[in-house]
Image (tube, rainbow, N blue to C red; front, side, top):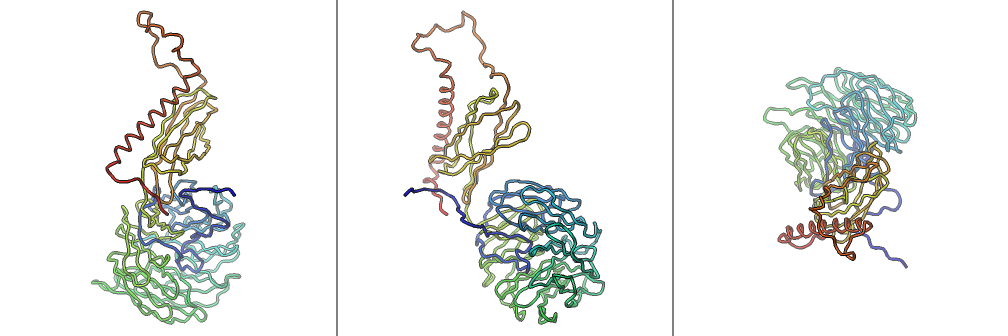
Length: 546
């Protein structure tokens, strides 16, 4: 029987079920996942040209999100590598949804888009009220995010309508008109859609039939009028325990009977030194009988059946984003450049991660990784592992090559991680790319060769990253032409020529490639020896464990 040995690999047999495909992971808006890290260490970050308040969604090894630079982005979930972007007509403040190979974008610019998840090309575009100028008192921008259930897309719009759209062709199946702006994202559960609207005199929670758009019941959510007298009600409904959990514009959370629409309990948030706190932008999160809410400067866990406090955890800063449950932990981004992880049982703080700016993006948790956006324009991926970081060193045997000839490259990973894949992407002058993968040897050395077929400047991009290591991406260029590379040495005059060597020591022109290859190997060996000596006092060799 054949035997195989693998190193630092993850094998998946069957479907990869690890995903966070929409704003709060599921159509109930629970904001819960089964696995999450207790410590937070940077895995990678990806930078856009605007703040990212969109919650990243994850599906099939890719991360999708919107930015306030008006673009939708698709990047690699493992290392943050860019795949594609799609330009809209407005800053994107909503989150996306992914289902059956399609990406759905909410109506931030007044249209709902369906994109191909692999290429980013438009499948359909549906008018959803057009762009609406709306001024709100709350500092954070919130827009309704699409929720996909089976072949329907549900999303609210600033034109006061809730839309139900065919997920396959973009046809509007039905609309339900409310009496005010909708910035909340709908929850869809057991054939019903729950949505809140900012009406003139109070907020309203609607329960609507998911099939035909008919009203089942509505519940008034009274405004709390204080200080600036604003009526912004941005928090989205969450379904759990035969209840719907919603927030008023300020101060109050409600537990509402899912069958009757009656308010079963009210939780009044903590008051600060200046009285009632700011707007309740964050939505409730739910898992296993507990509701997690933003409570002034606290994260508070409530009993879902009666609204009684189970625990309160002091964060000490302004909180505008929905907490997320993941594998026994609670994750929360803050307005003061910190992301915290709390124990979901008692609220004790387990760890934190600091960024360069505040965050208005709720975390998503998928496959033991935490993803969130930040107002510094970046999306971050953090995990609980200590990541080995290093460099890729690589040299070509020549920087100018004749078309049709082969260029040879030798490289070294520092630190020397054995048997890991190095991805090489070669780009020709026309922008076309070809990707190959080579495996590092036990000492971290690797090599590859390539035969270019058109003239111009070529670029080779090398990447090497895994669950416990990440090397800095490196680029090298070489030039291809019809002519053979010119000799760099000037011919000597007869007086300057060296005496002729004996015949048995003359180097054949056929041996030149051999000596060039040996020279490259010698250079790499020197680099390896130097790096070994440099690192030697720092301890023993690195052992990678999963």
